[in-house]
Length: 533
Image (tube, rainbow, N blue to C red; front, top):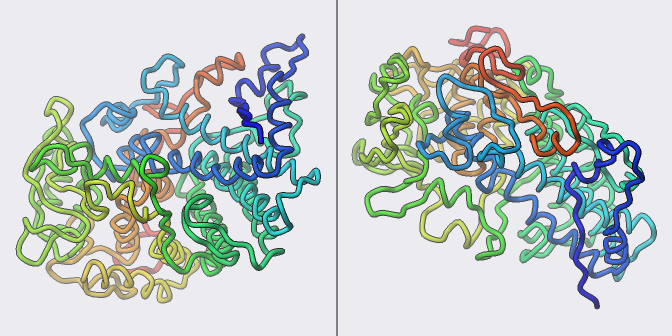
């Protein structure tokens, strides 16, 4: 079999005719893609490796994870790498979308890498539609199901990150495209879910379909497990697409429940392979380069873990002007943050370390005495399972749906599952956590939190270190982002320049796409105790 190099168009080059209206543009590399996808095993390899291409920009590498996590105040860092310093500065400023901005990869990397994945799988699905058979009916259906799945999760993340994008699928005639047609993010996400449903429909035709552990989705999956995974990703897309409190309230929450119930029943944790498939987000969040300085690149933020504090440290820290904030030692009953032998003893997910590892002139508000330890250090990020989607996440999405649908009592046991088992905390009721000293979580005023506060706290602490973008996607829908944070990213300046379209951006005072003032404790429904609606 000949080895052929597959050509992948960046979207700007796909649509280059938009800036050359009088030219007939022909893609001279297209025959290579067509010849390659006429070869069954080569075609299968394109789709079998597509998840590996998608994985880094889905919250498992540097872009856009560090920018998004620090904007959400999940992780705090004083380093300039990966655009995090500028985007997490307080007060917030707009994103610099210049094509020569040295931090431009915050939106360039996910844009081009997601469309690279789309391009690969479009070729595969198109070839199968034209009659290509890969050995037998089962393998052919598996390749097509995987292709539709990857279209779905790729466009799902495009819909998460960007205000708009072109929809390019296996039916798009690339060489005839002359004018870019951009689709608004909500329609992009709706398209993504339709592709996931197509993947489910194809998979259901072949009960014996399986996915191997060493490639494809990097976890051994049966046909039914693949279908459940697709449903869980659809649940994510439904919940995480909204840019505002109003949009999140308008989600079809009954459909979220249906998807969660049809979704994963065990944690999805693909198996890392050294230097091939790994989770660099987990590596940097837990990095230890010098003895005594764990999490030396970024640390859990007090905004995330502070509500568990039983002293006035958290309340006073919130009330202190931003530029005067200093780190403090918490005392908490949450065993994910503090062990049983005192405030300096490590918890299951987080430990205490006195070192302040970031430069003071970049803001002491960035300092934290806490480090991430749930995923381990050393080489755990590239050996063994890498938690990517948990049953706990799905439980808490369902719990949010139930609260919003006026069925809060049904949400209580879902919130308590991890709260009791992992946090070793007393259970919540519809009234919220027990209103007593040491209550977890507390409001920023110091009062004991509501059931809604407990849901959001549980979602944050259980998601810590799993994925670098989800905290941001939650925060914009809960209206907990700092005011003027960009709620999404623009099409990269490089792409706009190629297409001869005007530069634009989001965020900053008075800018479009800027988050409103925080309103962290307002309930989505009336009638919950300790929770103004």
